[in-house]
Length: 150
Length: 150
DNA sequence: AGGTGTAAAGGTCAAAGAAAGTCAAACTTT
DNA sequence: AAAGTTTGACTTTCTTTGACCTTTACACCT
Image 1: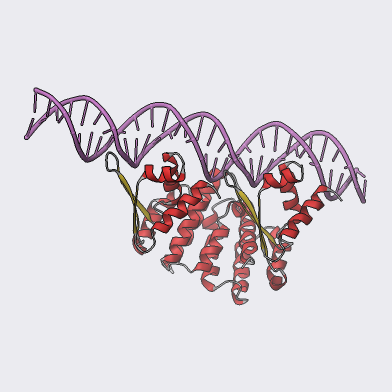
Image 2: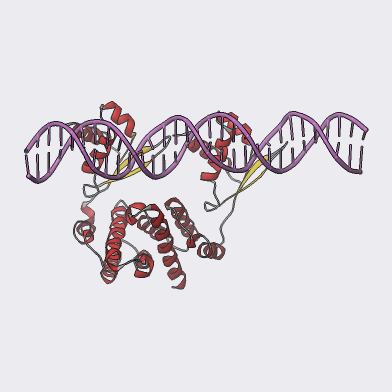
């Protein structure tokens, strides 16, 4: 077993009953006698969104890293979007269709769908088409990832 | 938790029922055993206008710092946003604050605020900071313009 | 009454410190 | 060889501290 696995296990244990864990990168690194960036490595390979984890953090004095777990099974449609559709380019009409679906599935309400539609419009993004479609996919992906957190 | 957060909480508690709080910088600094300018730091990062706080102060003997909470006026707020804030760069924390205000003013509902927050996050935009802040301003502006139209 | 000196506030800014983030090179395992 | 790990140098963000500045009240002269 390598350090990454050990650290992963350690963090998983912290999840005991709760769905949230707070930790200090430096302390952890010190405890396991490894480079601080090793912690980032563990987080980015083991505590990913597809696995149902969300990460928040803050730098500077009193900084922290906070992990939380979400239930993925309830969100098949979103999951599918995240794994397939949103990794590629996303044109504006398609994005509107996705938003409509999300709204009909009651995953988001209609105001949210509309607002996001404006946010993803060519006018809002204002950039060359090729980049624009990538950008649009990325924004929507991010919104969804966070929405499933509930 | 760092001192700044603790001081912030302390001040927020002073707001108990009233909408005004009066305090002495030196006394506070003394109480928390920190540099007086730390108080200014807390005020300028936590009790900002976008967050709905107003700060008055006076130097010299018998000087003071007075904080008050203002409630935002719907039209003024949007107007100010469109005319000033959203023409310039817009950093992420400020955008979150704006969304919170818009939600409190019932201009958008809380789900929309949250979704837009994710859409405007550095991760969603994924571009160099300088461009990112322009982009963020532009997207939010576009959303806002269309929302008040509708 | 009117200057004026002084102490008592608060303000500003930049440097130092304290986290966390990134990335690529070196190393290991498969 | 490819994939996965480990490490460390460098970056970015947020906080803390301290030196120096400005404003105000008040007492003391004349």
